Length: 158
Image 1 (cartoon, one colour):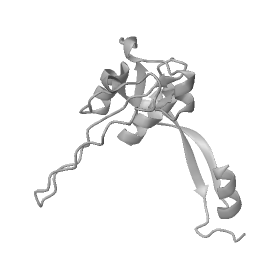
Image 2 (cartoon, helix red, strand yellow):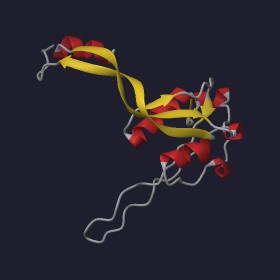
Image 3 (cartoon, one colour):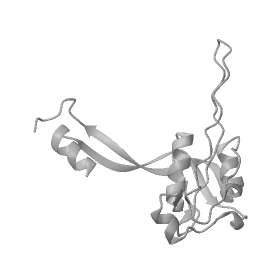
């Protein structure tokens, strides 16, 4: 829908292509006990649940690098990804802000505070400790990208 709007209003011309680049691969780890399937009520309640593709997108946003889901795991699970901030103190000596609080799961059916992990020091550690998955660098990964060939700066009026 968004691409249609951009094509109509901004004359977007684009295509998808596969490129070889540095990325991360998300694979199934040895600790499947950390994966908790999401119930029907959790899916409807807005709790942090999703597929492994959803989890890869969450990790991708944190790493700002493509993450490929190579877990081979299907289904919907409770998603946990809490990583400490990498912000450094400023030159004025002001301490960096504390890590964000864990998600509020008080309204999530079947979740309790003991299920919220503490913040991990890295994305690799978070995937391993919180979800039982392995995150590793893949130097020559084939990644599907949206390539913008042309787009107008000004929109066509309504």
